[in-house]
Length: 170
Image (cartoon, rainbow, N blue to C red; front, side, top):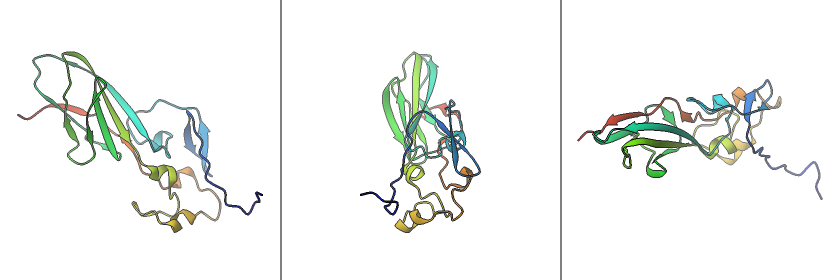
């Protein structure tokens, strides 16, 4: 039988929404379209999957080889696709990739930036060292109850500036 002395498992709210910091925790609000910047600051502080950034590029046949460069972003990795075909994954510097698969005319470029489970699972309290997740870290909860949402320990993930396309060095 269940009693109040049993350990309660975490509860996960799923759906299309955003969070906004309050004096104690968070408020659930309707979603807004994402822009460049931290997912945390745009209402997705606990999001752990990927966000897709899509672009249309027009290319003339006389163009030479092009490289895509991510200059300001944070994530575990970024997967780059051209016209629906993955051309590569960026995870280590330099964050650039040759853009194979570009055709003459209009092209679709998708960049999927992936977060991590740290923001979803924590630990979120006590200023944990990044990369350290010891069992005792999950037991640190503020004694006065939930702190403001802005005080939760989460990583800023996202694309903070548009990617650049440059002529590839021959």
